[in-house]
Amino acid sequence: MPGRWDWLKEELSGISMLTKLPTMTKFLKGKISGPDDMTKCSMCPNMCRHACPISIVDGKETTSPAGKSRVGMMIENEVLSLDRENLLPIHMCLSCGCCEIWCPFDFSVSDILRPVKTRAVEHNIVYEEFVELFDDLRENGTIYEEIEDQGDLPDDGDVLYLRGCEYREGDSEVIDRTMSVLKKVGTDPFVIYDEKCCGIPAYNTGNIGLFEDLIEDMAEKIRGSGADRVVTSCPSCAYAYKELYPEFDQNIDAEISHIVEFLEGKKLKFAPNKNTDRFTFHEPCKLVNGLGKKESMQDLLDRTGLELEKPRRNGDETFCCGSGGTTVSRLNEELSSEVARERLSELKSLSDEIITSCPTCKRTFEDNDEEVKVHDIAEIVDGLL
Ligand code: SF4
Ligand code: SF4
Image (cartoon, rainbow, N blue to C red; front, side, top):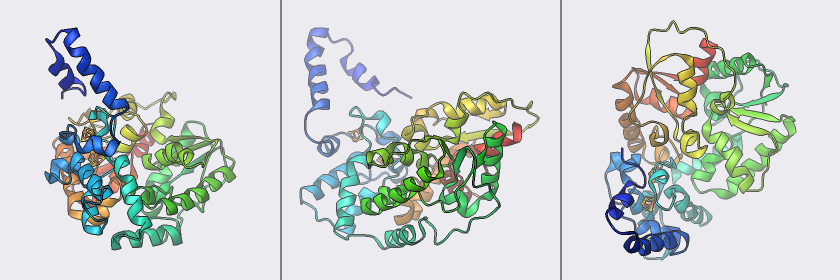
């Protein structure tokens, strides 16, 4: 695949320095100043659309990255009214950041458009599908109706393991295996039984008021646990705690890591690999583009000695599972599934055994294909340590 700046290098190649200098200066000036981000993105010839999972499966101009910005700009300039119908293309975004790595301005369309979503929620322009989510988050503190904590996990130790809504709701096996990994690397993991949602679904849907309430509560719980290290299974939770909480004045002194980050650089003694299966892997977009861990999951997997088939879209060119960002999966289930199937067809051409490190990716792939076996990375690591 061509690199991010190849198009520019190509345009400028063979031109003398004296001639290309004004063009480069103009570009850099436009990057630093120029019009606001939404206008810049609206005027772009969609230079990232080849990497946008929605564009790839949907193929429509309005849901392309720049297309969404154009709709946003028209709403902001009152050419279009702020209503559910006009807002719909804006919500067809997975918050995956796959546009950002190709963008000459370093934009992620999801960030550019969040203020429009927020203004809509403030004006009480909310989809029915979001009302239920907001009620669950407000009343139960989770994305589900209610979660009954299963198992008998310790509530005291030195590393706080935050399990996240998805695994608390439906995958106690991964929780147990993650606790086991944490023990095997010499820590004393514990959980909090009144764990709540990290708040990112409210953030993604533009309900910043609800997001602020949720993070105030959750930050207080984390601080109250006394832990100075926190580990999550979900990269979106880790991203929220690390990047979004401080941005919204909720600072947590504890060091926060996703399980892949936590194991990075740790001495791990893997048993010789007797597994003859070949695996492939899916790096979650929030791990790669959100937490900036472009190589970490592959490095960890390489150390296990498993037979791995690398997908074409890997590292910082990874893809979304289809359920990122909350809005697409809630408002257009079919489009979300199309993204999942697009990714699954690539992965399945390599192996039916898929390793990932995100509860949402795991559930999405399992929901969209009964034939594949999806493993959380903690299950793999635990089996070999
Ligand atoms: S995100 Fe960047 S590359 Fe993509 S359409 Fe907008 S300005 Fe262009
Ligand atoms: S964040 Fe993802 S889905 Fe949204 S515009 Fe960018 S690449 Fe497309």
